[in-house]
Length: 301
Image 1 (cartoon, rainbow, N blue to C red):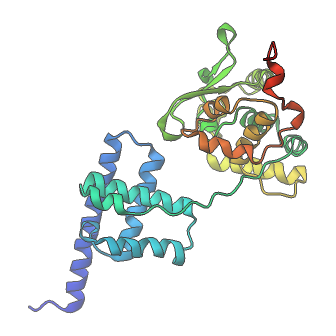
Image 2 (cartoon, rainbow, N blue to C red):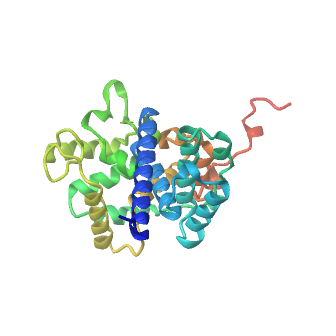
């Protein structure tokens, strides 16, 4: 019995599907052994799957020009931002270097030219307006903690009771497995500590500081988003607000109040100081705090 063209194409398509699934499995296992974060594993795998959907062929068989065609497709046809394309490029480089073991090809894949934009921050008056618009005490404490410590969204949701350290005069928050899988400490506001104690007395959280609907469960990203949207609506703020904006506000306001840029880098968990330096461009650091080092000399020379 002869095989029709349709059956042959279907068989080839199934074979390619099987090949890409094997490649994705190899990639995920390799990243897991390398102890990369779950977010990185998801991003790199998604990028490889998109590349397959574009070429419909085994990624091991691609030439350099075909990879460039794929990157142009991401930029021009899909209109993805440079940050997203940068993640996909990082995933492709990792795949060709670690799985295919073609170091030269991996090194030739170009990163997109960065087009950084300055983050927009809220004034202290707008922040107060937002906090006053919270529907309940739990949400108010949650968002004030997010702002006062510069935590990322998932770092806040992952926060556990024993991550608040106040013994021996310490005032800090331990961040476990932050971005890049790194641990660090950030500042704990004395004002927020009082509010956290009051919140604990009222709500009695168990494992995570901010529970979900069930006691002991973790508050979801969706619940956090809903609470913030509700607070923005009730507050009457005519602007878009997301959890990361509160982190931007923390960084900008901390610099305005005189925090050292290196200290801020450590608190935010930035690997590079260049990431932290962007806040110098949006902070309104008054000249009243500026001085000449010559005036600090004890004796003139």
